[in-house]
Length: 186
Image 1 (spheres, rainbow, N blue to C red):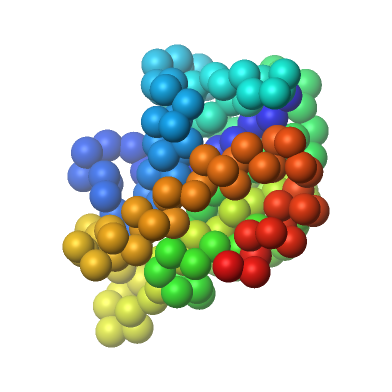
Image 2: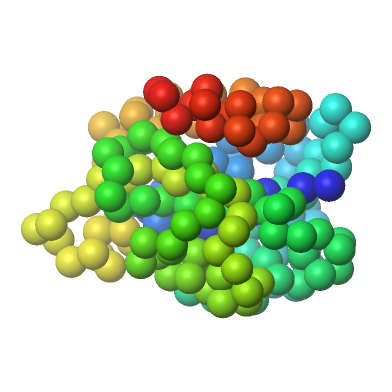
């Protein structure tokens, strides 16, 4: 069993913002598998997929970004999952728009959602997919990440989201090392 978490902020005012890339990524995967986020538990909305004999929970924490760990931890505990079964998708200011990077572990890089997950599960050793949102140094960071995506950014992300279902299936069938080797080169 795997827990795949897409980070974002709940509410209509945050839809289509750079900080909600994790939610958008999960939406792309859910759409491919024809599932909806119709279940709720522990301040999270989730969908379930069975793929190649593996049960996967796609989770959108419904607390604000900086409280994401308070949603993730109960799911891990209830389903008796370890941090090795956790895969988190988040935005990254330090990478160009749409670029991806898969990692086994690492620092939060200042990302409040990742910081809170690490605080609540007691480790930074979990799989993650970081999706670049670029950075505009002329705009306050908070305003930038909470800002709406423009048309050009949306087009770039559509291309990124188009191969996420395949990345996801490869993660389940090939293992994380092979997925990192395949996709970190793009």
